[in-house]
Amino acid sequence: MLELSAISTSYGAVPMLRDLSLTVAKGELVCLLGPNGAGKSTTFNTICGLIAPDRGQLRVMGQNVAAIGAERLGALGVGFVPEGRRLFPSLTVRQNLQLGYDASACAAPFVQRLAEMGELFPRIGERLRQEAGTLSGGEQAMVALARALIGEPSFVVMDEPSLGLSPKLIDEYFAIVADIHRSGTTVLLIEQNAETALSIADRGYLLIRGRVAASGTSAELLRDDTVRHLYL
Ligand SMILES: Nc1ncnc2c1ncn2[C@@H]1O[C@H](COP(=O)(O)OP(=O)(O)O)[C@@H](O)[C@H]1O
Ligand SMILES: [Mg+2]
Image (cartoon, rainbow, N blue to C red; front, side):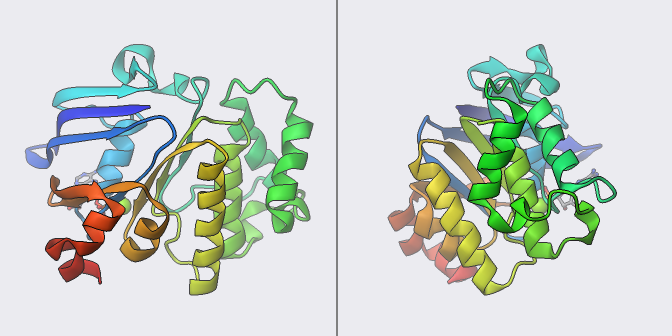
């Protein structure tokens, strides 16, 4: 679903990602951990084609993103949950979800998928006509997730989706992510919340200053000294 091989990225003259290699196979839930400023969102923006790497290979769904154009990723079955949700605040919940649907090549009709999202997120289903900017933080997080899921993606990439949520909502949110994974969706979960992310992930990577500092199964990372020192 995703292959980054020896990706290097810089902001002007400042190097950011250094020789980053990371893969996500079909059916996996992989997490990318790392402290603030480690390059997690830079990785996210590279995957969705917003930043062109200086060196290295990037393939999403087997395709070279630079060659096919980033705007085609939705139609290939990739859903994105960007950092900070990035909803359109003056559009309604339904309109925000429509944008996610329109970016996909989903075969099911929009109204059917809208009803299914309403079942998965009952609080969202009740608020389809409400302006997204007037929702609570937790509700906005659910809309951002529903917007990524409404097109029935086979692969979802999330950038710190639990940021700003209460502990109770974080548990609720991660339970939904685990369900999505169980039902067959491949997930790359970018997170600071290491213990919770590793509790649902198959595997993970720890990014520090743009480099992979550790990687392995969730059990291995929970025992890793650097991970323990940083998070646990
Ligand atoms: N557009 C940009 N221009 C210059 N520097 C940036 C830009 N975006 C991010 N950076 C810098 O790159 C580093 C990594 O940022 P980021 O990928 O957002 O980290 P993370 O998501 O892990 O917190 C930070 O030091 C940040 O200041
Ligand atoms: Mg970030």
